[in-house]
Length: 458
Image 1 (cartoon, rainbow, N blue to C red):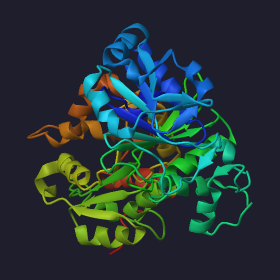
Image 2 (tube, rainbow, N blue to C red):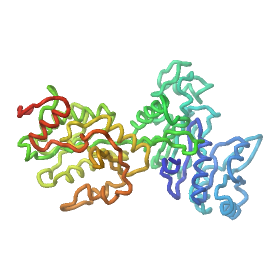
Image 3 (cartoon, rainbow, N blue to C red):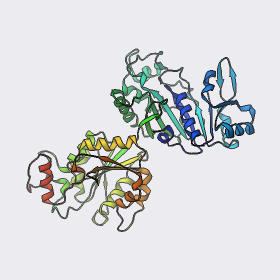
Image 4 (cartoon, one colour):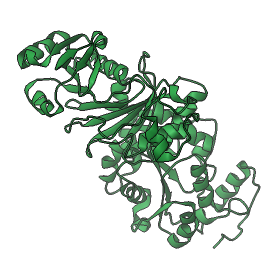
């Protein structure tokens, strides 16, 4: 995946790069990607860069050359770095207050800004006067390098290591761990310091290998960092690779549809026993928790109080679908989507009557969503689509606009060319519990034996 895809760059963006461990290489690479797409790319810095780094850009010129000259340079080179002065081997950018004038007077498609310095170190905790992010910034990319893992917490490896020591109580010189990097990235007074309130935030974990242990460590850092609702995404990759991004971790919520009337079953199927101690709905929620899906919203309807009493202690948000008697699955899906936080990028739709929900399938679907720029990810068994299915927020307005006899599959099928299918080796994605026979068959397939019509747990 390319950087512009991972960061979801749009024309008119002002992109500020902060942090440490590859800001310049990431900025440079993104600029070349956009220039290859025939965009007019302008770059600058609000701090300073080494004079030798000017060679990384197709063309560099002083800002006092004038707007017409800069525009002509964009015509010829498509990617231009502008600066204020060069002194003693350092290149200084223009005053950030001047940038709005630049945006209004020069016909570029995007402005890339190096807004921080870190002396080439892999991790940064900023001082109070840092970073220098222009007020008109629309996207901020905090950068950190996985090369810092296992290194001593000191000034040779972390820019302003004392800030981490003072804030978190870490012992000086102790080996840096994955959660520490995540803490810095999501901390309002460190990694998120100085970011304009309305700017999107797409972090980048540089030096992440394509395979192996460190890829898993990077994924953990991303998931921990995303506990901050301010982060929109965390990309994992290597800025200098041909395809710089291996995957993009975004906040995904589960919506569990558990409002059905269970007419064919004759009793609430989500409340049927599954194991000796757990009902079907409890078992499903626990599989999601085991898979680290957070948050989880359970949509209730029939026997709402009983379902709520079971899932609320598990940390789920519970939403009551007032239209459950007549609205079918669509009304429950709408209720669930409307209840999700604003920072959620996609919803995993989970059926409350599929008790053989497999954490391995959840992992496969989540991995496919992270590795592809798809708006829909669905599991497939023998060429048949099943659940759980991930649907990007981009399609939620279409789902919420459905009326009458329309079904969620109408929106899904309308975007068939944007579906990523994950082939799985279990038919559990296709099978739900509609009748007593289904119930017994599913228990048998799960190795639990027949349960008959044992009364549900109150």
